[in-house]
Amino acid sequence: METRANYVLIGAFTILVTLLLLLFALWAAKYSSEKEWRTYAVLFTEPVTGLTEGSSVQYNGISVGTVQNLSLAPDDPRRVIAILRLQANAPIKTDTRAKLSIQGITGSPFIQLTGGDPRSPLLADTDRREVPVIQTEASALQNIADTANRLVARMDQVLSDENVRRVSNTLSNIESMTGSIAEQREDLRALIINARKSSEQLSATLDNTNRAVQSVDRELVAKLPGLIAKLDSTLTRLDSAANNANGLLTDNRAAINSFANDGLAQLGPTLSELRSLVRDLRRISDRLDGNPTRYLLGRDGPKQFDPAEFKPE
Image 1 (tube, rainbow, N blue to C red):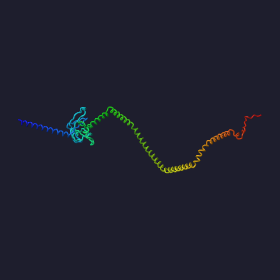
Image 2 (cartoon, one colour):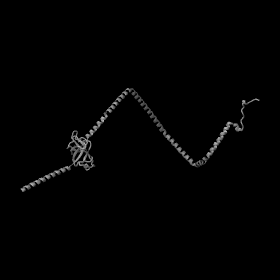
Image 3 (cartoon, rainbow, N blue to C red):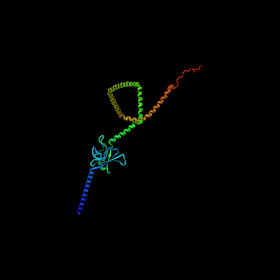
Image 4 (cartoon, helix red, strand yellow):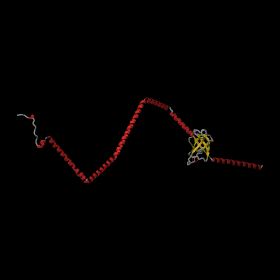
């Protein structure tokens, strides 16, 4: 009986050890598996229609993982949180971007990772959150949708009631102007003919002007050497005269200085005497005009016979 109990204990111990070894192997396999994968999060601000859990995640066209979970952001239901399970050796950098793409035209959607400068640090080394977040960029479909929305908004503005009214008024004005032009067709034709004649006359005038200018240019060019020679001769003479004047000034500097000092000092009294002499001459002239006989002979001239003064005795 005692031997049988020992066998039971040994069997139970063996089973327990086997279970422990199995659990350790499972834990080691899971740990090893977890070391080969990393978890990242992506926040989309656009609809992720067709994207499901298990969808592919590609880095520049190469599969590096799958979508592990999809959920709405608790603080903003307009955003979608995608949890990605990526290979540990995938070079997810701080400037790596994620966007929604479609395989072909009607294929299933997947997440495309792009970017990642070689000099940029790894996102896992800088983002200390439990799950690093990869930044997103708008997908091609989102860009097309945004562009279409902008075009629709602009078309609404262009086709507004106010613009339609303005276009109608413009067309009416064009129609009125066209009718007015049609009514004045003959006047326009005459105006065009006059303009053509004026253009021809202007062309002839310009031709005559060009010929006159060319003739003047030829005459000027022909006379230019003689003019230059005369100018050169004149400048030479002026230079010689200036040199002679400079020599005269140099030779007579003493006389000029003496005249400036003494002659100019005597000029004032001389002018006063000349002024007095002119006054005396003017008085003599007046006396000669009034009674030249008295002034020259010292007596009055003979009186003229006046019949009115004669009285017979």
